[in-house]
Length: 362
Image (tube, rainbow, N blue to C red; front, top):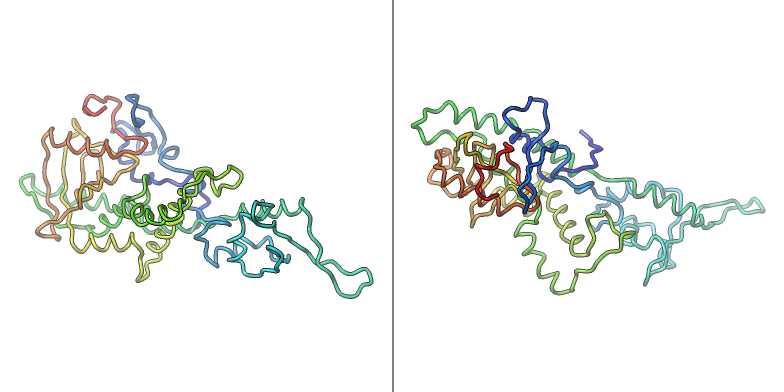
């Protein structure tokens, strides 16, 4: 299903809603948030936090635009002739490559956009520059065209099924006798794949991305500020951020295509599904888990992922992947995991109570 969403949640709303206060109504979207470095609890709607406008949208001029993307972006130019640096260019990927220089820019001539008009003698036609006023209108029309397929596919393939995954797992755990510390690992692969995708969806960028691009960054001294008028989006204010963001979007595209080559995200998810299992840590309502805007903690080779305020998953090597291990935690162990999550936060933490006395890290 197509989406026109502007505010793209890096941390899905359906995930954050697990931290709604127990007193909240089923229709409520409000959660309690503590900004990093603060001790003030704020009540906010999940629709208003954890996202960035157009974060997963692709538009004209972005390095990761495909031919199909460019066919959409440049529909407003279908009746015009395009000259770039003195040459007529028909390849839309080339248009995209030079889109920064649509208007006059240092080091490159501006585009010349021409339309056909009949010759005065009525024989044949000639190409005439459309002029700056029309050129600005066309430029504005192009920038309004956004490809939102990453966000659409993410919602359809992962976000929309998260609540069901949680319910199935909780049902399996809750029906087990208290003394039983192992239950069938229902929805194990779905849980692991969701966790790995969240690792790549949230900020800061994951270690694999940073390490992959660090060599390029050093080789070409790539980090320069981008003037406001030339930014693809307001949050892409430097060439380094553009590079990282473009690479992340490419990886997400590969992951969501469900083809043989799933990119780094798909390969990491497959590796964890093949070699790792899940241990669940359970706490009580008197000592709940927090979560954060950077919800997945890479703790050595393990992934720590709070599922609800009462349930936390540790994706790790286990003797038997077909079983979940269950551990009821002491207060000290809950504090240990909450401290780990707290330190991993990028901008904010989520708690399910206004009372912070259960959380010594605040």
